Length: 413
Image (cartoon, rainbow, N blue to C red; front, side, top):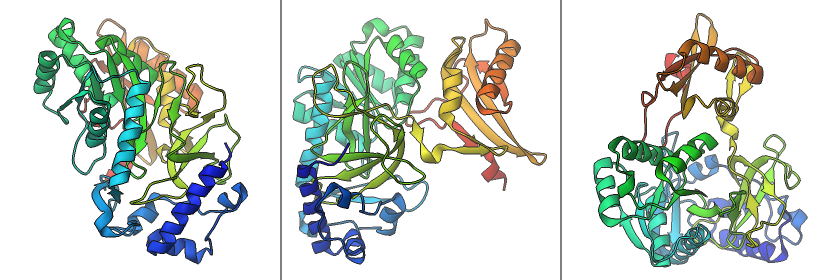
C-alpha cells in the first residue's frame, strides 16, 4: 500500500521536527543527507529503525520537542536489554486516547459499558492506555490492574462488568477460575478486548466459549503509542488500523523490500503526527499481511491480518528453522487437548531435543495421543519431538504473558 501525498507531507513535517531537535534521529537524518521527501520512492530510501537504535538513544535521546512540552514517559520492560524510553506530549496522549476510543467503538463498546482493566499500570503502556480510551468514550472504568484474582472476580460480579481488558493468558486464567467456582451465571461480561501477546484460535475459542463473550484483538507497541493502533471489527477478518496516525508497510524481513499487498511479511510502522518521539520506518518484527479487500463492515480504514508470529521467534533445532506458530497450528488440529502448551528445548548428549507438553483430560489414552501428536509435528517440521501429556491445569497460568517456549540451551551453557 503506497504512501499517500498527505501521509508523505506528514512524514516531511516529522523529519523537519527531528532535524530541528538535532536528537538521535535528527543526527541520523543529517548524516544520510535527508531533509525532504518528494515522492513515494524517496520514502522507500529512508533507513529503517530498530529497537537497538531506540536503546542506543537511552534515556531521552528520542525526545523531539522541548522538555517543557513532555507530559509523560512510558518504557518497555527492558527484560532483554536496556529499556526504551518514549516521551509523550499532551497531544500524543490525547491522540492515543482518540485511537483507543475508536478501538472500543469498533468493538461495539459504548459509554453504557462497565470496563474492567486488568493489564498493568505504570511505565507499561497497557493499563493507562485502556483507561484513557474508556474515559474518553465516557464508559465506567474499573481500573483493577494485574493480579489478585479473588478481587478481580469480586469486582466483576459486584459491579456487573460488561467488558474485560486483558492479556489472553490472564483472560484464560479468569475464565478457568470462573468455571471452577461455578459462577458464570453471576458474570455479566459481554465482550473482551485482548492484547499484548499472540494467541491461537483454540485459545480464543476456549475463552469466548467459557465466558460466553465476543473477543476483540487489539494491536499496539510501546514504541509507537501503546495498544490501540488497531483492532478487529465484528467480522473478525483482520484488524483495522488508524492510517491517519500511522503509515504501515509490510516488507520481506530478509531483503527489506516491500512485498505486494496480501503477502505475509514484517510490519514496519512510521508515526505520522507523533510529537514526543516520532519513529521513522520502525521494524516491529511482527509478521502479518495487508488485507487488500475492502471490509464488509463498511469501515474504510485499512486492515492487517492477525499477527502470525515474530521474525525473532524462530528456533533453530537440529539444524531446522522452527516457528512456534507451526507447532501451534498442529496442536490446534487435536480436539482432545486444551489451548495450553509448552515447548522446552534442551541440548543433551551432544544433540538438541524438543519436548512439547500438552494438556488433556484423564479420559484419553496419553500414550496414543502423544504418539499421534509427535507424528503430525514431525510431518510439519521434519524431526520427531518428545511429546508429554499432562492433565488440564498442570501447565503454568500467567497474569501477564505466558512463556510458551523455554530454551534451556542458554541456561545450560
